[in-house]
Image (cartoon, rainbow over all chains, first blue to last red; front, side, top):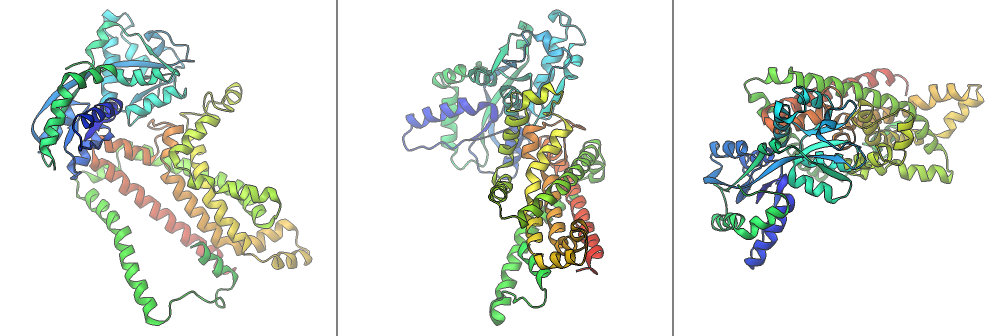
Length: 233
Length: 284
């Protein structure tokens, strides 16, 4: 089971539930950035299912013949801004204040692209943050991480003041007590990660792979995903 | 390797060399040597071959990402090694000569960073020097904000690389018999001159080996840097971080950067070996 890093907690629960319903089946999970998982598949890593945080990575995998049949969307997640509890930032406009240490995922990572899209969206007139909001905020970036998990970590550890992550990641970060999620204006909801899932063409257990995907799309798994902050597709 | 250099210094010709009897030994050595060469060599050959096979290798190794990261890597690792050399040499000498319990305690501490996974080292440094760290507040009051700075990169490199130098230099100093130093002192040389003209040349091979190891470790440092210094082009993105970043978009570009790092390291280490041989050959 190859799944995007942002699915770590939710897929852990889903896999346990699937195992409980199918005695004798053991689900092995491998989490990493979607683009890294795709690279591993290209080099012949044995996997049954690929769950990506990004339609582009899934499309690349399909073009490369790595995927059997089509992919199915199973979840979406809006972006969220998290701030360290001691940062003193209480609203979105605070991200652009001089001296704020902001951490984003690198542009090459889906979360990094969504983060930049979010800032662009928030620079539109309707948000009232100013047309140069994205530019001023981006000038506060002190690090571009290769995984969205590192963004969460740096904010939770207090090394950075703020970071842009997926909402499920923001839930996890806030649960630690060291970080808070910043309320965003409603238009921010438009910028979303879309998660597709598919059977890998070289899958050693295609039947079980198909059943696992059916389970991910079923109401019990949807509930688990919702509990971690994912929305239905 | 360390034992080798020590043996060489003490008495090159007289010490018995450990060897399996007769032809069995050389046959066994030949076979394991061949396996070893394949094991180490094949991945490197594969990396270079795949890197060379891409359309725009030259473009990738002379691109902005590569050159900015390479410059940062060379500058930071040079500073780190200068600090390690200046600070580590007296420590290594003291550890080699002193039997004090404190020295023994430091001796045990020195090697700790080698067993620590670098990512953990980075987190530990954060907890010490970062914001909210043990002395983070103190540093902040003094106007020093380490995380996400080039200084943090140097800190991380020193942390992981220094043990390799101190260890090697200590063994080098231990291999210099006290008698030589004492003779020099009775002949009227000052302690400093004795160190410079007797101890240092005799310990030089081990010192240079240590420097090479420490520099290579500093140059390849990734985990601690990523945790403690972050990843920003031109500020904290050294070659290993640039390679990881490139890997997210294009494996080819990551391989090109790896080949560049490999080439620069091999050249630098070869130059160090050559220079040391020339410098010390007539002296020992």
